[in-house]
Length: 252
Image (tube, rainbow, N blue to C red; front, side):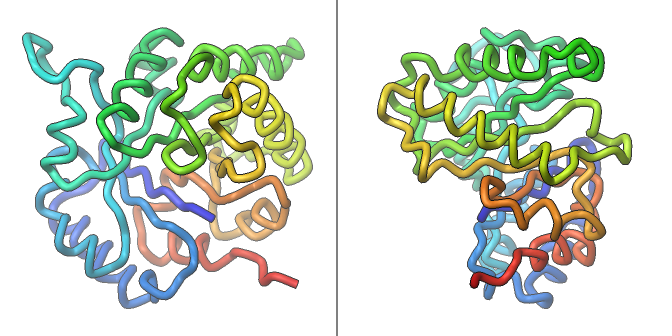
């Protein structure tokens, strides 16, 4: 299992340090799940030591596909690593649909990040109108193919996929556990076909994202195809994020 806390454009230094300290107090070092904190870029260097103490890795919410140059406002993989990050997110719906990133841009970012030695979470998911027109499977498969076709460097050790139905992000709506199970199963199958044998479908971790909160986490995580969650608003408080992490069903 893996759980990501994506703070988006939120958080002060004090809030982020308090979050990590409280997560440690709540037993973050004892969980068997991998935990990754994605704060704003500006906070990464400040959090490196506290993250280690809490047993929580750090990641960047985005990156650029060049090492350096005249790219105002961008951040390179090397800069992320220097700041203490080991992970990055590519293709989050807000980057795709608010900022306007295309599938080609997402592919370049994913490829560059993995080549640089970072681990990546690739986000895929459909808009509400695409869902209503019955295009969910076509859209998600296209996003996966664009990002992963021929990407030999990707495997189950450095790639995680997050299924985030865009209509469920920040809306309070959530895919039913059965819907999540079905889509995760299809994603696993498609990645196995697209990945050219480098990404083992059985080992690939597929996260659910889309208004995950303590009240629905256990039902979603009970599904065998769901390997964790990428959490937005509910990750801003250690109490609620910790509650989601501890919702993992007991084995057996």
